[in-house]
Length: 408
Image (cartoon, rainbow, N blue to C red; front, side, top):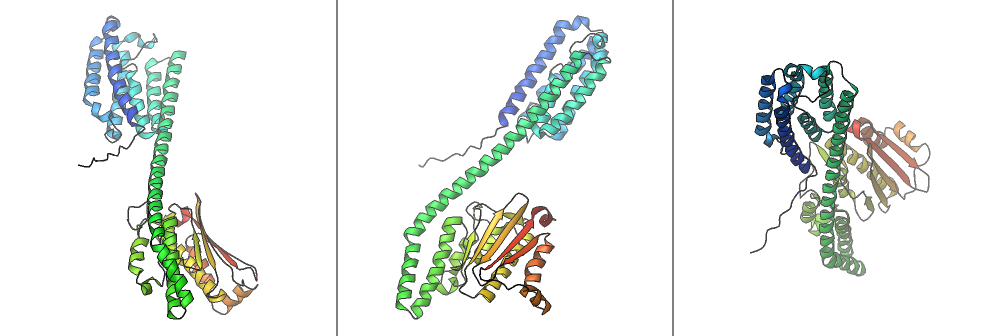
């Protein structure tokens, strides 16, 4: 019987929750023993006994709450902090000399466990929130706080915020590592697929293209379609995206390529979300052919679905202009750049370029292809479309879509 493979997902914060569980137990025992050895100095020992009993029962009953982040709810954190603050404020009632003698409070260092729970759960902001309440309670409890009181308050405040910040950094690192492992797995699968396709399908298509071109006639057309399919499959094995050719159906391969083009190696075969985010690369891949080349970052370029669709439509309009004005034989290149604040797509061709003043003349004659199909779409997304053309040196259209404006 084959062995089952177990995949263990590491959690950098789980050891912190385990340490917090042990800390709460030890500090509870410490607070009870400290009272037992110094109970003679308390004017109202029954107040201390009542509070420590509640604290001990609460600590034992809520151990599952501090076992992981999912169980540690906001309600529990608020209740836990309330018990800690109550113990601090009850200290002068149980020990009348607590405000004149710089001694420990009833919960002693158990209070830090409440603050640490905030830090591990919500990061440094939550830690600063909880430790500020503890600081105010300690200062009010002392009446006339000493230098040691301020020192202890500042120590708890800084330590809790530092731990909260470390937790946030660790979580971000864990997400980055998980993403890197997913990309590595997708890359390995793509390499395996590339080897299989290269050894079989690509060689056959290349042979059909060569033989068809050599024979001529109808065989030459078949060879041309085989060449387009070779380009489509090479795009698949190099970037994980399939540009289904318009000639695929004629070659009898349209159904297979369409099925492959709907998948990404890092998405488990799921289609892009039509309502939420969408990978721009999957919308631009169908534009690739033997005369159109796509260069992308190799990772998903996510935009809101409507913004991605409008951007792809603008790219399509730019490619239509290439075919219309530069000819069917013109070469075009699509470059996708994924920046933190925007997505930039550049369409460049090797055509004759646009004469100076030609665009203004076209708009005056009512031909608004560039103005409406390209610039109009980008304007609605809050972006820009810049057209650069030098006669004899081709045309370049740069489309910029800001992420924030596109989301709105």
